[in-house]
Image (cartoon, rainbow, N blue to C red; front, side, top):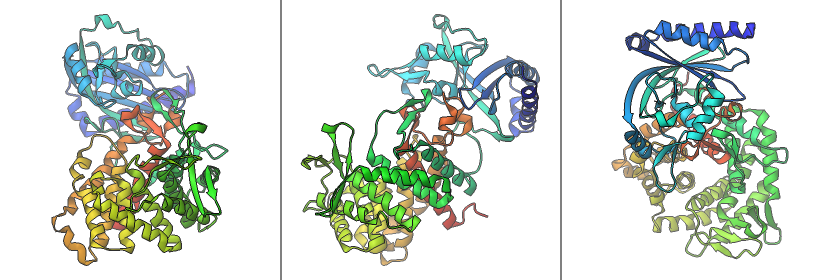
Length: 556
């Protein structure tokens, strides 16, 4: 046993004990019998070690938990977390299978015990961080992954025997109230079916900026010496995603520059510039015609030219031009814009994908995101060079969007480009389109269980457009629009998206906490942390930060 670690553990546990017993919840929780506590000891290089005890009083449970924890003080830890079981419910096996089946993948937000003594009991974060519950692809039924559970017990539950599933006749689900300590900072954790286990702190200016800074830092670390990114990881088992996509490479750079504009973190600049140079190498440039295209793909016989990739590249290059006040990439952005114009059809719509190098049409339409992204990119370039060619291309595209009711797609890129277009062309038809793009979706966005980060982008762009609309004769369009509902939705999504952020109290349960700390993830995609996932969270929070500042919300 390490004497210094023992002293640190004593201090930290004393702080947690005082924090818990001084809380309002303690008055109620100490009345509960029995008392069931979990202690999670977190590390940066491996999953947390978790201990659990069950006693007839809090003090007896705490003493036993402390003794078990101190016996493990052989390696320096990064954080401690104590969970107090607040409620339990018993289920038959069939009932529990039905619960798993009805629950969205990775959205099971309660703990599970396989016995009444809570020896084989696991916190919600342990369950999801180790993929213990899965859905059968064929039957669509939920099931327990016995291999994952037994492996986890063997490696992260000291002195706990393997679970004999043949002896399990029922399952107990339980809820918890958590308390967390890291770097001498103490946090009460949230309860509830959607926020469980995440720190209960205000979403103020400092909190938003910290998430932006850590997300930017994560992406900078993911950028390699040659300028390419590591594409991402499935966080449960630290499995690298073996794929690449220049479209997402470019849009990630755009988000990084947005974040840099707020944080002024100069350490991210080399990664941004490496990434832009890598993007340049992926272009097909025809100097004679003055066009350029992003060539995406890995296999030689599957190379493509994509409307969305050209658009994302323009956004990255123009954002760099604007923020760094350096026009080194302006010409290539203009060549890429000419490429987009070449993809526009007589009716105003765009062809989406071409074969490369033949430039023959591959997909007239692939995904609606490409259209709004292309219009937005041209408008961002127009902001810099005021070339009417780009504006005319966008206006022609919008006639097509309106005629074909593109607002029904409720796409964030369409929201972006409508906001941008109305800066220059404050026409009624554009404002109406922008309202339609968000209005019918507000209820869905407000209540959506997934953290889906583009919702924050969509609603904020619409809000900004509306503020401009109020200064025009077209404000009458707002007569039947619930602006308060939009505002409430924006703040609800900004708060709820924190459930897609790897706070240390969550990251500690995954295979490689140091890899994912401070990044963002998509829960229903196996806690995937991919560069474009992080990108959209970043863009949304960057806009939210500006939104808060404009409203003087929570700013001193």
